[in-house]
Length: 269
Image (cartoon, rainbow, N blue to C red; front, top):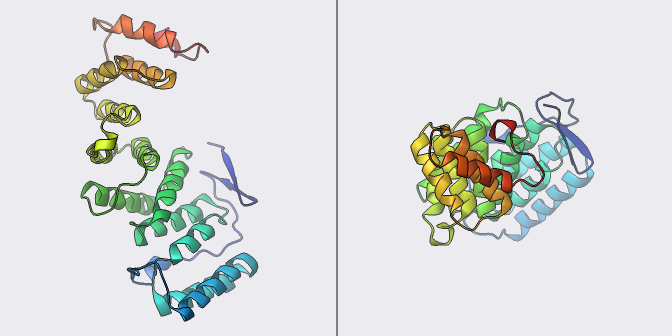
């Protein structure tokens, strides 16, 4: 699948190995997980962090890698380092390298604000890839999702949850997707979120629970939805229902009505 993404002047192409100008080091295999409880560093650590940031922006990659190793040996995975990792991730020029740095953020700082963006971006990379071959990075996302389900990590913004859920569905893990949605829907502010409910119904469909899926899709069609949501609900219903279903023809007409551009799949027109 030949998509390309430009980040900070670099071209990233999914599904195809590219020649990288970076010698990437997976630091989590070398250093223990040591997370600073607070957001502040002492004077020396803060000075070293700023030097490290300047090195990332201005010096050769190997020099940054060496300095990062020294920093981690001295201070561990302190909280303020998460922001630098996010900047580092944005400079990668291959999907695997970028995804690996985002996974490091998720792994070491699951309760910090940077993780929300890391989850969203890693999920987007997975969704833009025809086939996701990096099982160890998927495992990091899976472990984070489990921490949400268990209540060990704070629930991120709903947009990040939706992207993560779609990523799990794309890699054929609808059960994990459903568990994430269930955890998000347990929060009062998300109970009526139509996008979450649509994704939950889609997870039911992917798990071949067609009765539950069709019922939820149909119930959503009786609510006030945007045109996009109405199309998704109608299409989801038709995909998991038989033409003999008494509701089928009504939903088919709703799908066509919600599709003024004529993009409805031919099978349902």
